[in-house]
Image 1 (cartoon, rainbow, N blue to C red):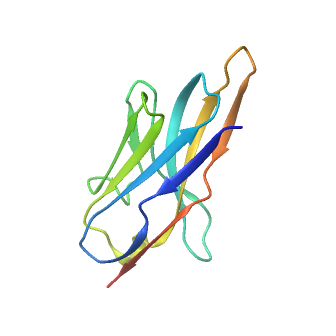
Image 2: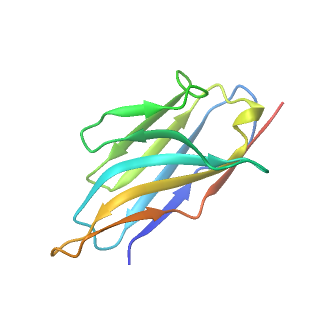
Length: 121
């Protein structure tokens, strides 16, 4: 059973930084694309940033230049460094990973349980 567990959320003031982490555990052969999504109250879940196994990154225009996504494949961990936070960044942040299982057991798209980020003005 593969699990993704996010951490690092919290209540902060505008302008400060937070770093989110997402640790994948379980029987994993490899992880292809990893991504962060977020969902604000009353809004649809949206892509924040994603990173391929080769390190290619892609960002939402709303966070580009302020957020940095990275990964540690040795630890099966995904990070999101969030700088210059704004009240509109307030949301539940979810980790997503494309998991390949060992022994030819296929692949799966896994989600974490989410971590709340609240930015006050």
